[in-house]
Image: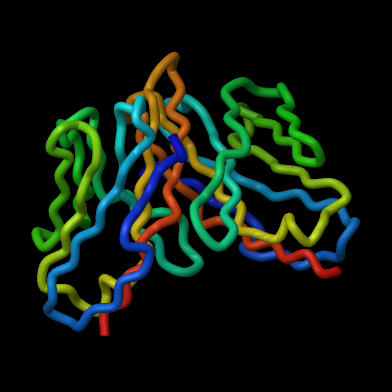
Length: 112
Length: 115
């Protein structure tokens, strides 16, 4: 059965720290991987990754995919309290009619 | 277009009552999804539409749940004879399936509490 596992489940750090969130997957015929940020309401899109080794960057956030080892990481540098959220990872298998398989998320808390 | 809209944002109901949620997707999006999310979990797929056709329903979805998208625009999700286990956030998302990508845009969700 296809699955997506995120780690850690929760993380508490201080403002200014750098964090790395992990997303590993077991999916038949991988198509793409997506990262979302969820604060109190709806998930908002961060990145879509399809190719190994190509880093996607947006400000202090970056992400990279390793299709050989079947995982992705999301890095956040110089964290701020506004980065506190649940970070969700989802994978789209090739033959799934573009259905997403979601991880349970990593809850990140940034202390001032 | 202001994104995906969901209504109501909060609903408190007594066990056994029926509830209906509405979702207005981004107008040019052809796909519409319903998910359920409980605390500490990722979104759980319920069903999705491509235009007005309902293409897939989760095996976990009981026959108390029904969804429609009558004209390929807004959608409704109805839960009949609600149970306490139905308490959750119900998320709607839409996407424009193109170029091998399917990036979902979510609404703010409808939180259901069944007493």
